[in-house]
Length: 98
Image 1 (cartoon, rainbow, N blue to C red):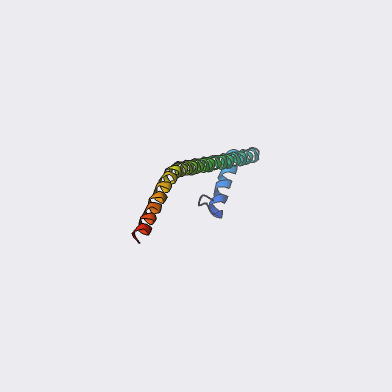
Image 2 (cartoon, rainbow, N blue to C red; image 1 turned 90 degrees about the vertical axis):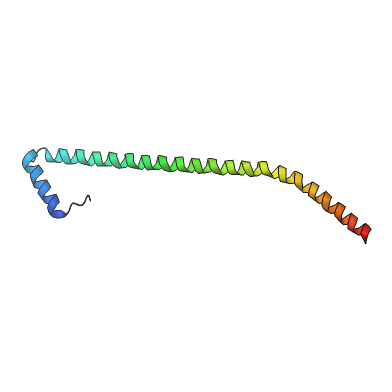
């Protein structure tokens, strides 16, 4: 954790024990634990919010793409009957020529 090995951790604890005294060391450890827990919760909340925003943006883009495809479909459908009529006219012309 943070690149601190066991020897470094022991030195830090000994210095803290000398500076703070044995009475305040448990309170300090408790406060430090609470602070780390709060930091982890805040980090998870931030991560969750970012993921929700990304999902919402992807959904919005997907819906916009589907709407654009549906808007293009009627234009294609209008072109298809005209193309079918042209093909029918061509077939009729071929039958007359034969």
